[in-house]
Image 1 (cartoon, one colour):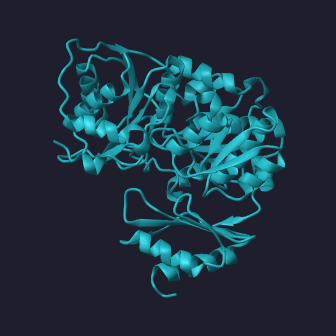
Image 2 (cartoon, helix red, strand yellow):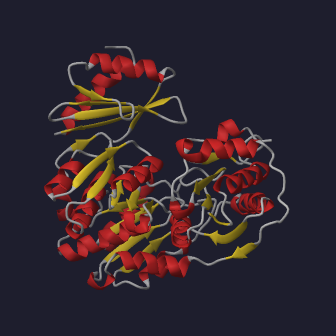
Image 3 (tube, rainbow, N blue to C red):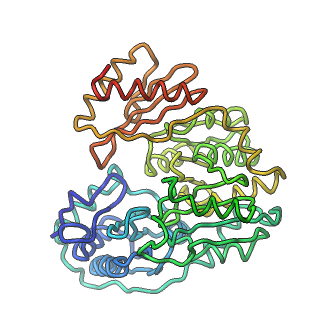
Length: 447
């Protein structure tokens, strides 16, 4: 039996596909536990292109059907397609994927019907308990039906934006040999912008570069393409295509905070006074932009299950994270890299200026990016930092946030590793470097 303690994480199941990790035996047990937990007559199951995914998906489906639950087998799809089916058909969903992790990893993302999140505080612990309990087979085995969700998914996305106002922009897309490749051409067939593609063929060995655009090294090919072809916009997707990262017409990457602010502005023009959710490591420019455009900013912890829950509680129309996850009320509050791309295409089309000019309106600050420190006693290190900066405003919503009128930082523990993650923002690069150095000195015991 798998070591479930090693593969059940804060938001999903994730681990190496090796004995003691996420094996087909483990996937079968988790499928049974998921079916028992959701108590639904039908569930939807999709998978990415990893070499281990067909076997893990088949085992998960076998576990679910053993509990008498019918399965819509979606085949190879992007994660946000599973969320679409879950929302549109009101069925729980599961996606076999390890997102941006290396090929030897795999995982399972799960949701309730309506794409409602399942995380450690919303059902994942109970699914683990059920998976470990060796559930007996039901009297009736569920039926598996192949289902193609892509035509409905494309229609759904295009119903949220206004394709008729799109200009014939030239767009580069790096799918990273991940799941964006199964749908991206179908979308561009329906809109005026033209597609120049990189690595669109799904390949679970990820032969060209890791499918992790958060690492700047994996944006190099897209940046070269945008510069060489003089494109209006570049888009890079992660392995399961729920996250999107953007490059402007000058081949400069946009932060997740910049995209959040631009998309928030677009939604507020259509929904005056609406609530917009942002996590606590986005730029201060995000809530400032929301307020300036008549909206209501709502700050939340990092992580999709928290964002989706707060969106449901507040009626927020949009939510953004610095990590490239963007959530839409019109998309069942689920994150979608494809929808973020379409909204940004509409932003640029309607404005008329290049993205490199538009972005400057929401980028008044300099950010450090996320800096990781390996720390065995995370709690003690955080308390030492809090004590050192005791003269500043502090809060503990997620780790420690320390604020001054012109700068701030957040220091929070990793959910899965002995790491502390630091994000700093200030008016200029020198101030950022100074604050990073001061926090580092405290963590490393030199201050």
